[in-house]
Amino acid sequence: MKNRYTRLIVALSFVLLAPVSAAQQVADQETMSRWVRDMKSDPKGPFERIMWFCNDGEILPPEPYACVPHGGGIQHGAWNERAKTLRASGYYVANVLAEVQPPDLTAGVEGRERLHHILLERYLMAVDRGWIFRRAGAYRGALQAEDEIVGARRIVRALHRPPFAGQADFLLRRDAARLLPQGLDLPSLTDIRQRSTDLAKSDPGFEPLRDKIHGQPDATDAERVRAYASARPADVRTTDYELLAKAIDRLYLPGNISD
Image (cartoon, rainbow, N blue to C red):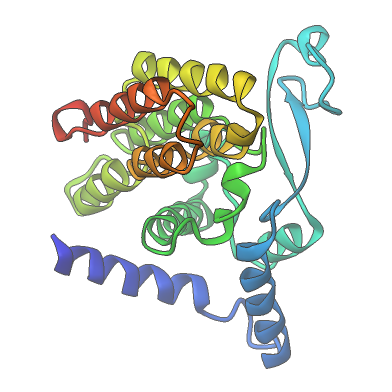
């Protein structure tokens, strides 16, 4: 498995790092590389602000129920100018899976390239501590875990239909199923989110970790919760922190995650 993922990252890195056009200047490449490094340390990552993205195309400020008159919608981070420039240059970074629709991936060569970039980004997030989302995971509202899971499942289903359904794309489908966060149990995740919210209400210092669990959850969150609890004063009850950590452990047991 390790060798297969090595081949994947090499192949997808070539796609992502290849020049967009012969006219592109080396300085531009260096500038964009610096932007990516900056995003890793930016508390907002590739985002500028939180917005509502309504089903009728309206983009509205994060007011309660803002999209209700517009047929509903979802709330997440809006790209900053650097992320927009990278994407306009053909580097599809800062992907919000909740916004990806099957036609985005089936539109000829560009759609397939976008899929490759999505998978590369998910790989980098796994091996490079969140990559450009490293600190944005705690940026409240930037990503909604449930919406990301729904989007990931939508992508995986699309890959089982033409033009990706053939034997030639078997490895692509398999890698998508492994790299995209589509296998988590939603009811268990909802319970974890509620537990973290309850803790943050009684302990404001827990708020950044609560935001991380809501936006970009992973198996290491259990260790983070335990480390936070161990640093609390000796007279503070830590039972609820341990219950949250155990719930996270259960969520990421191999038998609870589907490919």
